[in-house]
Image (cartoon, rainbow, N blue to C red):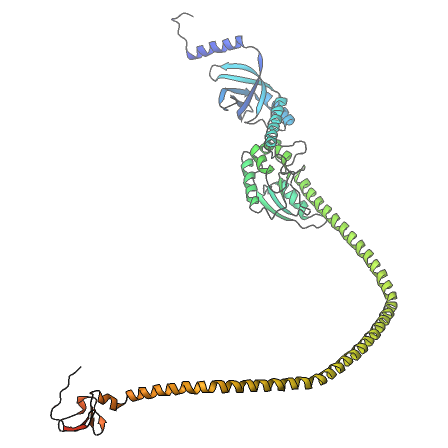
Length: 463
């Protein structure tokens, strides 16, 4: 092409289409992940293929794909029949494609065939990887190791309230032929689609609030597309169920498919009805054990009764001999006691007689001894009186002499002789000038003689 030539966009796209067709005429098997699937009104299917980087998960390649209607119906049915998985976004596929380029629609891949075994292998690989991770974390078998209650009649149910499987389960439980009483509580959850994982985990969290009440958790999902089982291959859902403190029974409606949730649950059954039958069978086992225990108890009681009857009969026959033996023993014992009492009384009487005799001999001696002691005591007292009385009298005489001197010194005559005087009015001693007034006649006693005078003036100090 000369440098001066100019091409329209359409012409350039035609050149590209021809170049691709000539250089890539073959078909290629391509591994990719589906990010989008759309089927139009004509029955054609348009797909978006992507490839992600392993470490960061970022998209490194993208291409549009087309499956024409005449092939789409066949490929879709064959894929879902073999994989039990819808051809939907999020799965990995191995597809046979032809490279195409259209002037208007650009680059695309025309899908000619799909290998279901690749998708099956990838799904199995994902399940195995999740189970391996749970085992490495030491939680894979935790729920399996829990002990199921002997009488598991308190049931927490995780299901959709409108699901046919829930109705089947309840019908089987409520109408069991043995008439067992079950206590059930539904914790509604979405059981298909993208919300399944989060919805079931939320239901488990609500059940955990009543952990002590429930014996078992039943997760049931009757009906629905097989592809919806992908939701039960979730790591987060499996992790929550594996560590849940109550045994979990799964009955999600498919016999041939075992999900990750089935693998870690305490017990996995095929269907909701089978879950109900399993619980009823556990009640049957408990009932059988109770019946066995009842029979054992009855047999033991019967044996004990027979033994006791024989023992009572034997005791009844022995009673007369035992009574006679007891009577004879008591008679001998009574006679022995009587003999001992008589001997003891005789001994005590003899002891008392001897004691009385001894007392009779001792009394005169004691009385004589007491009289002598009293006489000696009187003589001693008499001697003491004779000895101490003169001393006491002398001491008292000395005290009397001292008192006489003290009285003599304190007498008024001795005081007056020392220069003091005593003024009398009406023969009464005057103690204060206030007792006198002018004209009063007073007598003043001196050491020698007395003075009679009349009061002319009075002086006294106020203190």
